[in-house]
Image (cartoon, rainbow, N blue to C red):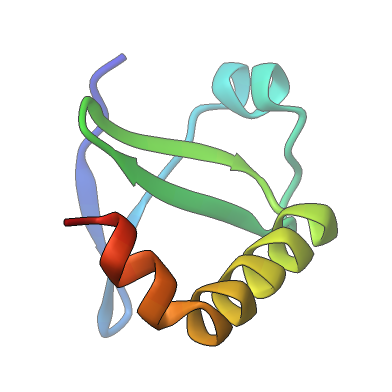
Length: 73
């Protein structure tokens, strides 16, 4: 599906068609997460579980920074 970016006030936005919103089970006001991968970008429903997981991963990376740096060699 090809969509076009549009000017919305002082910002640029992406208008999602009704059919796509239904498939994603999204409604006006819902929050989404946009993540980048080697093959492009993905849009998914916002999840507290995902945010909590990222928070734990960041803390672990900070705590074990030196060990991870050594393992990366």
